[in-house]
Image (cartoon, rainbow, N blue to C red; front, top):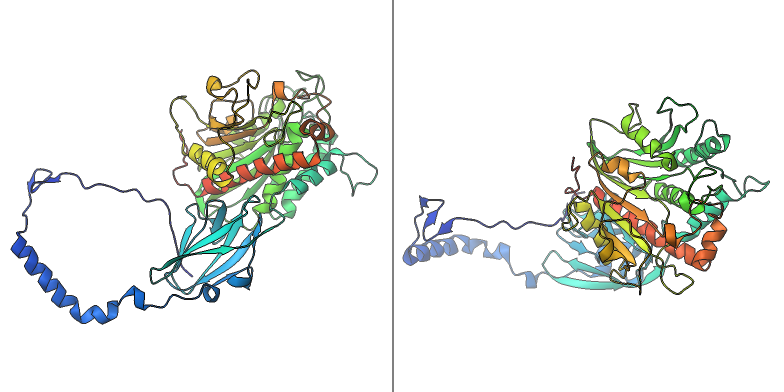
Length: 497
């Protein structure tokens, strides 16, 4: 089965042809009589073929119900399930399908960013992945005879492949302590140190999650300095190998939490927001990506020692081992998940929305968009998830930490290129990778930062309820997941080093 996949086409102009001169060379121009003679001969030559060419209007347009099935149901009975993978079959050589921007098209278990594919033989097997926010699903079909038509399909709510309910359940299991280990894990006190049995126990639990899904999973333990009293690196690295063995890309979150006496608020024991939330997001991505195929070798990682200076991600990037970052492959991009969920669409007690941050880089010139992944990030938020990109508050969001602060101090959806550091994406940005850093409220907007109050219960209280927290977390998880899937199939996203 062959399919044609459409990507954007760049139009090139032919330069230098004017008044019979091309690049300084003489060009013989045909007279009108010569041109007429040639056209006459062409008409005579193709006349016998006219019966073969025919008129597209004479070719019957097939019934959509006869050529399209969705989830093993013919089109007139089919329902698009929002948030889930929907398998389809499209029949008829030369038939093309085009989907809306908020419905992802997959062929051969790989996303097609253009949303268009053509049947080149008898059938096209594919999947549709509508976002959880889709309410209308209209498929555009161009039939082999050139006739174009639109077919609306009903939409039903499904269980999104990455969703706030599952995230919340895993957060409860990890952060709660009880006597029944089947109901709660109690994976708290994850301070990176040597030794810390609580951290090692949690790392083994996370490793088992990735291994159980079939990933090539390792625990990377490195004492990356000469002071035994300082924290070591203990990372969980899960590999999924791609079609192209010459490149590598990844996603990650740090699983360690701020140790006792950490500034500014004395450290934490649960670290729900910073960064159990991002850790659980990575667990859900691993589940959602199991059956997909990527272009490049991909690592899904849980870092340690982020709170002590990015030691975990640096150990992975700069050590030589069979499952460390390869030195002979192009590092294309990396997406980082740190402190998420207390962000738009959640609302503060004063009625204002919490800020939402997504920052891409490298960013050397604040007046120029410098990396292709920025366009992917903007497209995901603006066109696919349809976020309110121009929403602002009266006033500002506290102190700024980026070079664009005057333009973004009151912007809710703070999505742009930026130099902002303070997390593991810096490790990979320094190696030339294009990066995205997802972050919710921080510092002034979340007073439990690095404190014993950073608990799941406090997160629920701050955003006004369990359901509000689930909605906020689901939105940012979908944003990062879609960025990753599209970036994987965007050749312009290359290492800039």
